[in-house]
Image (cartoon, rainbow, N blue to C red):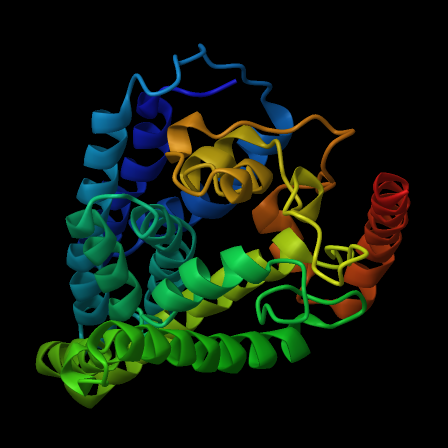
Length: 357
């Protein structure tokens, strides 16, 4: 079942005034903003059964793109406000600043990241650039290239830095995925420039935009809050990057594409991504937990993504944000997830062998 854009708009837009009020007034507003993004989201996922009206496929494409553009613009406003509110002396107390870091960081990690991911898959060059700019403001611009040109092509293989291996802790994965995706994205973009132009004009290289834009973002943060403002921006960006890496880690943990008799990986299928059916966190993250359908149809808008049947693809036992928290504790994570991943690996191997025969 697809969902109307109004549900996504409500889930993603409500935190914006809450965060602005928290930055301006502190106190209880900080608690409310943080609670919305954590406790409230968890409670709605776990305690409230929801079945929205079905939206005809493709019927709300303009509305979906408009919401993404609005969220991207709001991201920049919130990023500047967050740096100001947290870095300036005398505005808020220590606990309020800590709460603001957490609340803004969660929004950037779960909403801004998900929205940028949506935008870089759009056919419109303007929307794609808007998504790249959002990632760049979080000092993670290279993810634009690595995700679209590496991850989607090599998902479930050793050539994909963002596919977590069975038994690999998140911490080992995060170092490998960040550095590996940076290098792989740079390599493929450089190769594409050389093939297209015959040489590499570095000022036209996407990485020049990513790195230059990141430097400009840090500079602007310095103008807003001095050295403290720059540190705040880097801290918020690191927190947002951590959440994106956690999302990738969870959504592909232990799932592999088997080699066919020709030694090439089998085609990407629904069983190569973990999914989550939890409705509110899914709306907050623009249907990112409906990951199998996204990999099957990268150009499909978030409002039209559907969940596969449980027989076709693995389902997470809890919502994506909850599982991301669990991934921070490797022994607990492996106890919950390793046997589930092994079931799908064994089943997939049997299916591939049968198909080959």
